[in-house]
Amino acid sequence: MWLVVKKEIRELLRDRKTLFFMIALPLLLFPLIFGAVTYFTSKAFQDAENEVLKYALIGAQFSPELTDKLARQEGFELVSLTPDVSIKAQIDSGRLDFVLEIAEGYSADVLNHGSNQLKLYLNDAGLNLVFKRVNSLVSEFSQSYQQSSFAQLGLSELQQQALLKPIQLEKVDVSDKRENWGEKIGGIIPYVLFLLCLQGAMFPATDLGAGEKERGTLETLLLSPVPRYQLVLGKFLTIGLAGTISALLTVFSMAAWGIGLAQGMAISFLSEFLGQIGVIDFVLMFLMLIPVVAIFAALLLSLSIYARSFKEAQSYMGPLVMLVVVPVVLSTLPGVSLEGGWAWVPLTNVALAMKELIKGTMDYFALVAIFLSTMVIAGALLAFCVHWFSKEKVLFR
Image (tube, rainbow, N blue to C red; front, side, top):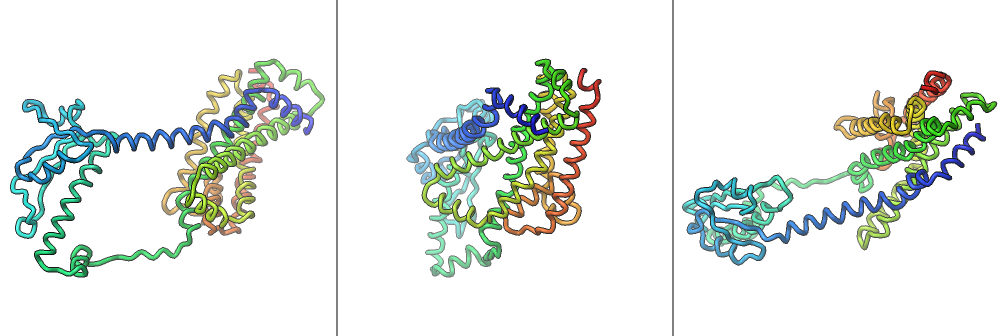
């Protein structure tokens, strides 16, 4: 069996595509993708913040001060309304970014007049930050009207605060920082790790099954004096090793790039958060990945053996992404926790356990159910793979 493992690993390492998917892709491409997404997202928000907004006013005569403030505000350009065209049509065409309607009777004397009514017409379907920028401008007037009214009433600062917030609800969070942030990001880490394990194992599995069929080397391998089950185990271990290495390399690369690019407070926070997670917790997360990778490896190898060609195997393996998405989504739903029956649900229990380990609230007795359920599923799938590999009608479709 180990001779088969060495042979398969040697062939994989000779293949430049395999090296790219297993090493170059995790170390370079994934961090670059995340970096590019972050860069373009921040640039899009910055461009939207600095974009000159074209606007029109309805009822400008009712509030000269607000009209004048908008005219003098940098980043706003006044445009006249086209009489015979609807406001919606002018905004949708891009001629206007928004229309502000000031109600008749607008007054700064809110004590006697009451609240003023403003209507903002805009297309809020895109990333334009129109409402945020206009609301920021209007809020300045709202605060000045408040202060003016309080001055007329002769209220002290304490009375003003009491009127604005008659009851203040103070939140006292009894969770520590690790539990708080672990709950927020703990559901993302299993999702990323599962996808990376699947992605890292997918290409080697395709090559070791359907790839050998295309190259015509499968018949030679079957003629060797090695039992069928050892051939399957050799390919299975190679695929599992590839998936695990790919996932670990990607996580290491993303962590290294993140720490390297972080500055000041970000580094101290990251160091503090990671420092609270014990070595045993990291080891347990890695150990739980092993049966998960075994499940993926057995499924992928079964599909690859059945497929007639490399392309056909890839088409079969694509839908397996849902096998990763659904269990992780279940682990993030309200009320789903590592208690009762959920500890026995494959993949979902591992995702829940990883989140609990990151939070520092893990019930270590639940690990028995987690490892038993995942190992039983992995063993059953591996047994099916061995049975599948022994069928001549499958091997020579």
